Image 1: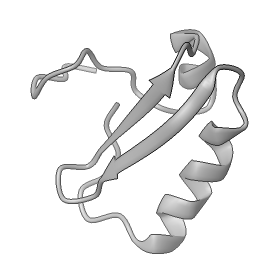
Image 2: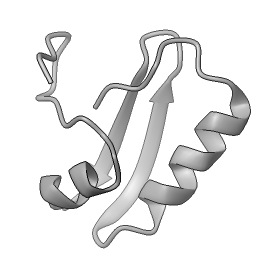
Image 3: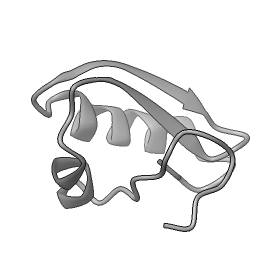
Image 4: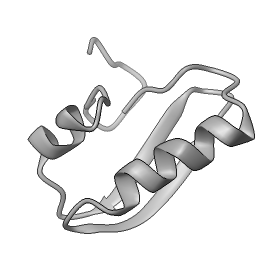
Length: 64
């Protein structure tokens, strides 16, 4: 999923708190430079969208 490139630490913490509490989330991995967050586990994409995130397939292409 895409975040804004160059997110500040406070923003990363806020997104982490929002996403880590969703059912099925096992791990979170941020790539701040790329503006991406990889969520590990069995997470419902609709729950991620409700949390305000854009769900993208694995890989560099994300059309939103």
